[in-house]
Image 1 (spheres, rainbow, N blue to C red):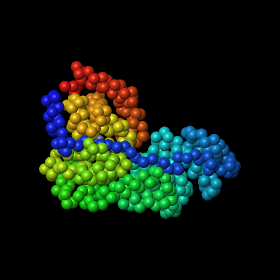
Image 2 (cartoon, rainbow, N blue to C red; image 1 turned 45 degrees about the vertical axis):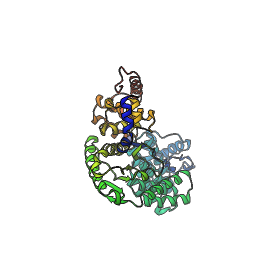
Image 3 (tube, protein in one colour; image 1 turned 180 degrees about the vertical axis):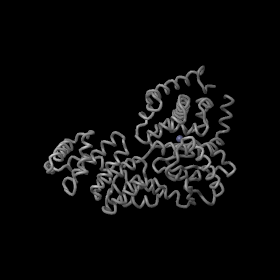
Image 4 (cartoon, rainbow, N blue to C red; image 1 turned 120 degrees about the vertical axis):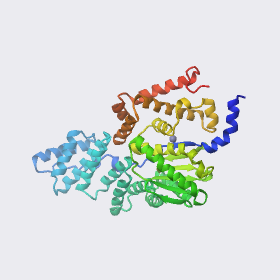
Length: 442
Ligand SMILES: [Zn+2]
């Protein structure tokens, strides 16, 4: 048996204890609100709503367009805004203006102009402040944009007039969860389930309840930036140390990404047993950022406060995910997320062990998973060489504003993301198969 292999095997339990790999998930629930449905059925049959000739023409054009269910174009949006300005107290005209503005907002959203979509919805809400469907459309948009507090506010306003709106309850339940209010989230989701028993609601409630059950005995410290939960009896000292380290890492990442996190970051320190209690994390994982609830979970029981340095790469990795996710509002591709997280924790692909060794170190990690992570790291290194961290930040920011990462990348870097990434992955795989040019071959 090769010497390094024997050494690696002997060191395996230690490595597993000290270097558990982070694991990252993208699993936001699909909270589709009724705002995306066709508006055709709501259009009044009578086209002669307006007496004034110029307005009558606009009403004709809008009703025909809405009845045909064809997507709005620029001139339709102008008509809709014109009608909104001039409809006065005429109830039928106001109703049509609201429907037209909602269709215009749908168009803006399809074009990924979220600010414009929000503006048009607010115009519609100003015309008819009780319109539940318009406000649900707004909640849907806000949740998509990670605007949790605003989504909560609108959902509560819907519920004040329609306490049984299952969509508002679902939106509110999720917005609360993402603001680290799992307890109220569970209450709201239970109310939602009572009026709408479907898989999405049931699974969400189940996951939130699991979280509450796992965390109910933990000590909770709420700080401006982090909500830290840990077992006060076992981890008191390490809890304080972790918090100080999180603050240090955070301040470095804020400079790197030129971005301040918009919400408090919930971090939970678990014993290994409790960390694995929900059965979701694979055996090799020791830390995770979960986009379902925005929480960072870390298993720490092998560590003492003086071992905190060993936790730093993982905390850096997970915090990078949190910040990149927030900056790009969930629109960064997997390889960018994982490449950046590894890069920030200090990993470099040239220094990575050969495949066989990685397989041993990662123990239960599948080799393809390990390769994929390494490839993501090499890709991000490549991108940083071509541009700069600033370019990456600009790309992530733009992707967050428009929802389109590929377009943002092309705007900043000047070439196609998907194509160049695919070519890179291919080339990287070939390099690794030929030891002569294999950067990590030994
Ligand atoms: Zn990760």
